[in-house]
Length: 360
Image (tube, rainbow, N blue to C red):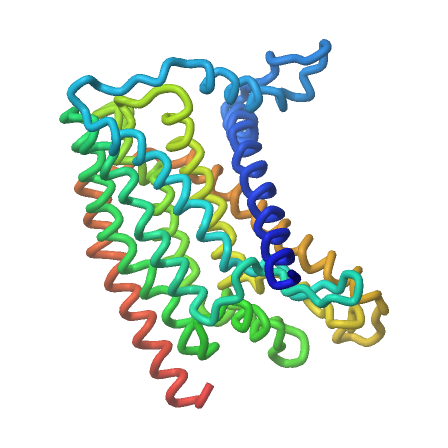
């Protein structure tokens, strides 16, 4: 039973946390945009007279979307129209199965690997799932039988092709250095140190790769400045014929993709669950001294480290979203093919030479 119960519990744990964080994103984005624009933000929804800084707004939004009419265009394809948002949500969620959010934790004498699916091809799995997510958007544009939604779906597919190639090439440098596409092993490799004190995180090994990954990864979220598939001021977007919770699922999928890119950035470039100078028995500082901790405490600190890093990048992505204007369509395609793609090849070429010369 253990081989069934433990993965099921980990799946439930990850699912609940990711969904709640995505729901909280709607409040965080409202509040952050309000602060950046010198406004108050969400503060109206109340329960028993308490607003709690607008924290009840996500609940109010959910109730509203469930109660709104589910409209399907009479000339549209009912099956594909219903399937499209489900695909976007499904692929956005299952990608988290391969993300290691901690090392191991011992409970009741059982050592549990804090990763839903311990895959030795985890990076390949995630990229495959991410590439499948665009099918929901394309089907939404096609099944609505609306020219504007179709344009949004076509924009999404061309954007995916333009940026996923560069996205894949940026992480190949890390694959060359660490010699694996197993994310858990990659995080373990980032637990080594240079000069006895500097963590061997991907950001120090691949600084250009980090910039390219963030630039291409944000395009996967289809959010400003890469939101040309939606283009509210131009074509309204691939979900123009959606209402109620189906629209909410597309809206939710964007936040899931944002959290996924934040999780990948943390895992690949910032040590994942690693805490500087924290080892299995506690802290060992390079200047001498340390602090002994129980294995359970160490595990909790590692999970907390991963969570804090992911939250930081979620905040950073929202800051970018509320700072930069939307690319024109030609600018977006040119940026992907003429800037990110050549730079990613250059980064991979230089990394390969360094690995070959220095026998890394």
